[in-house]
Image (tube, rainbow, N blue to C red; front, top):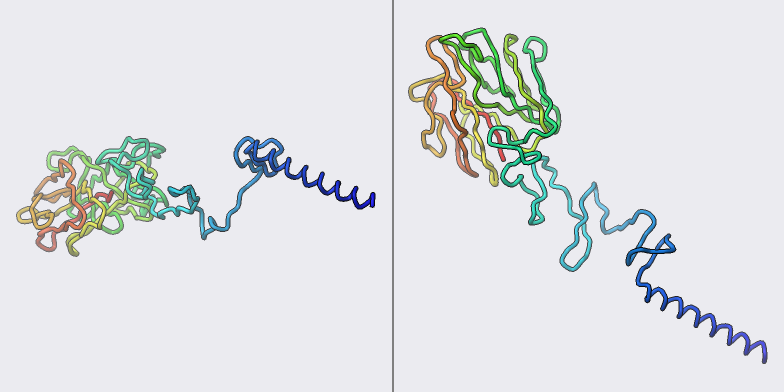
Length: 289
């Protein structure tokens, strides 16, 4: 009888100790896993794994309005950023890296790497992954009416440039833009200077002699350069409206070049075209943002 009573009392004491321990945890309100002195509601000494957050690749983890954690996959587009509304999209205002960008240098200047290419030894040159190449100067001192510079096979410049002769092309006014994987090529007498930068915008080079170009939904096309080898009737158009007529980035035997003094901005769904007379060239360069 004594043994039975003693065992009963022992179990009651154990139960009492368990209840007091649980009460202590509730009073402390901090729970530790691998920690004897948890400093937060839940303090874990090590990594936390959740099958609900598992996926094919890395992702952000965000909380919904109820406080539930969930996966937030990356967009896969290196030209997008996480916006304040919780969505991926183009950088607001196009400030570029460090907020230093503008219409002609939209990726900013952070981590820029100056680059000079010698056509005789460096062409063809492929822009590295994750980078944009901003061409700020081109020099070619061999004057004729054949192309001196290409981006991905699209003619960007014809004849002289950066040569101060009276009837040769003068200063190169606006930068050209080439994106990751795109190829810079041209005459062996052509040299190129500019810089590599972490890509934010998407460079575009289009041969309008092959057809029209429609700006993708949600994007704005900024045209920084137009190359045309024709004069009268060689129009650059947006939605059928004439915006430029003349030689541009071209030095023929009887005419000097002209430039786009300011960028031309084209909205989503709008159409860029050129009213050219074959075999004249009509191409544009710029970027999508």
